[in-house]
Amino acid sequence: MATTRQILEQPQSPFIQRIKSSGNISINGSSPMVDDKEEELSQSAFALFKAKEDEIERRKMEVKDRVQTKLGLAEEATRRLAEIREELEALTDPMRKEISAIRKRVDTINRELKPLGQSCQRKEREFKEALEAYNEKNKEKSMFVSKLVELVTESEKLRMTKLEELSKSIEVSLR
Image (cartoon, rainbow, N blue to C red; front, side):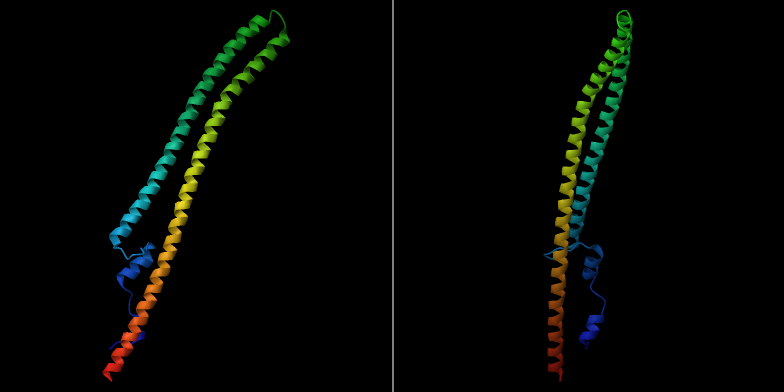
C-alpha cells in the first residue's frame, strides 16, 4: 500500500506534464487535439497578421517607387521648363528668372509632399490599429492561461486531498 508521500513523489501524469510544458491549458479539460487546434488558430492569426504587415510593407515600397518615378519625371519637366523660362526671362530681368525657377520648384515639391504625407499618416494609423488589436488579444490570452493554471492547480490540490482521505480510510479499514 502506497503512502501519501510515495504518491506525491510519483511522476506526474502525462496530461499534467503536457499542460506544464505547453503552457496551453483548457478550462473544461478538453483533449490535446483542441489545444493543438487552439495553437493552430493562434499561429494562423499570427500568420495572417504577418501577411497583412508584409502586404502593407509591399504597398509602401510600391508607393515609394511610384513616387520616386514621378519625382524624377517632375524634376525633368521642371528642368525643361526652367530652361525655357531662363531663355525667355534672359531677355528681361536676370534676377526674375531665378526667383521664378525657385518658386516653381517649391510649388512642385509642395504638391508632391501633400499626398505623400497623407499616405504615410494613413499607413501609420492602420499599423497602430493592427498592433493594438494584436496586443489586446495577446493580453486576453495571457489572462485566460493564468486563470487556467490557477484552476488546474486548485483541482490538483482537491484531488490530492481526496486521495489522502481515501488512503487514510483504506489504512483504517485494513487495521
